Length: 197
Image (cartoon, rainbow, N blue to C red):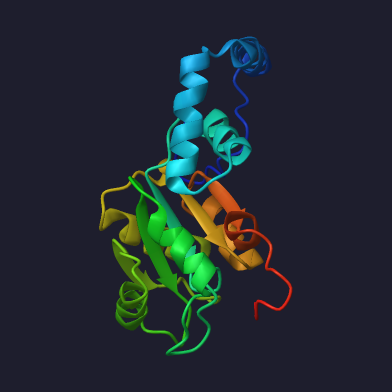
């Protein structure tokens, strides 16, 4: 039970290690026995949202939930200056995703509304965009900024995956207790030689 001053560390209640063991054992016993039809549904869902199956299954096993949205940083989208456009192959890939929300955290000096408009010009619908939490933000302020952005589409934090580039963006997942962090290169694939990325 967390309260004032609690750092959300491991519980000190009796039996915690036994409950953890039971949970890990139950998960291990279940995973190899997933019905084939369920695996097929997961493979289809992973393709629909643009993830490889291994990544999708890992997030799903860790959180216990399906993903409802991605939070992209403008760094992950290769948008570093006003007027930048995403690499065409990445834009096409992102535009093909279905049944998943797309959120953008715009790093300064980028304006979130302009980023959203620019992505729309590349055929990518963005559900919500806001200024990214700054480097000077504390943990609590960062958390609140991210939750405010997620609130625009009513997405539960533990069902949103952060896709970014930097250590600061990796910390967003922990600050807002999101589903996890995925490096942009893993989501979009490694840049091809001569691609300009």
